[in-house]
Image 1: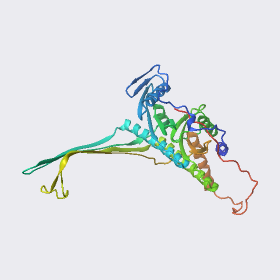
Image 2: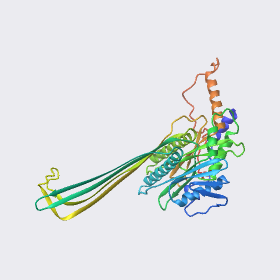
Image 3: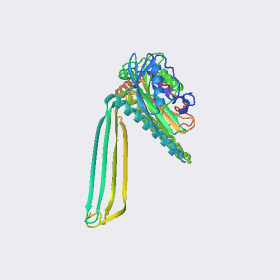
Image 4: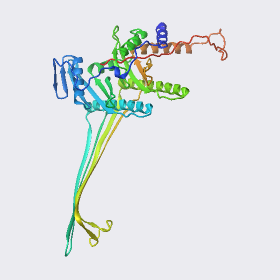
Length: 426
């Protein structure tokens, strides 16, 4: 066991020889693309397929061809999977930092939209709509004149809310459309991912080598896209052990001062690590997702043949007849959407993070990794440390020294670093 702990620590201290990666390296589904539809049929939002992979591919392409956010249900032998796609736009600025922050914010919002759609499909939504109409007529007759004003006002106020706990989903696809300045995030939940995540807790023994787990993780990242948000399930090729991965990212802000730039890079690493752990916790234990949206619309329409000299008094003896009848129309509509998610809980022991800088130097990515083997190894190391701490001190030995020990020529292994490729889709 001690050798496994030492091997894990040694592996984490070594750089990983991963490929250069970029979010645009993946060839995502695009409107007008072609996929093999043999043996696949569609009924509304439901896609029926014999093969899981083919069903997901067809469903995803259908969402792309619709060019709008939405969900697709995939019926396969093992049950029903839900694919949800969210998208939103971003802006570009003279300040590259602002552009990258806008883009990362768009990834976050697109993921929230996809989560909201998953919850809405599972739990439904609550809605309240209020409609009101008011019509008035104001007529004045004198011995020589007859004039009148009419006005109709309409008011419509609708509010909808979605709220629920979401877990067992993974990131399927991400795409940055730089031409239209729009990002897309697709999340998927299948019987397999839900079962794997539910059963992958509470390790009691080591089933594989911790080093092999991380090598498998790096190999998996090299095969696909490392998304800026989300999570993924990986099955170890040899042992069959399920590994859960949460992804996080942050932009590396540019600064002309080298010292500040180094601090900003370190801040980006810590941000991406926190976000990766949050994504891992969200898919393992669940997160509260909520959305509140609605609109308020007002409309006024009328005809006016006269106006009051003093509108506040509206004295019928003090009016001015208009030379020409005045017709008016005014409509105002306001719409709002509020998306949110709350993740709270404690990650199990043994969760480790790896951080990677993108080849262009603009992004910092982190993957947080959990596997039963890593948890069991960490718990065993903890028991050993607690046992040593509780042991009765020996009569022999020496007092600890807080002085000396500085050595410019001592071993200084490089910390974890490297450039990675894209994470494999589900």
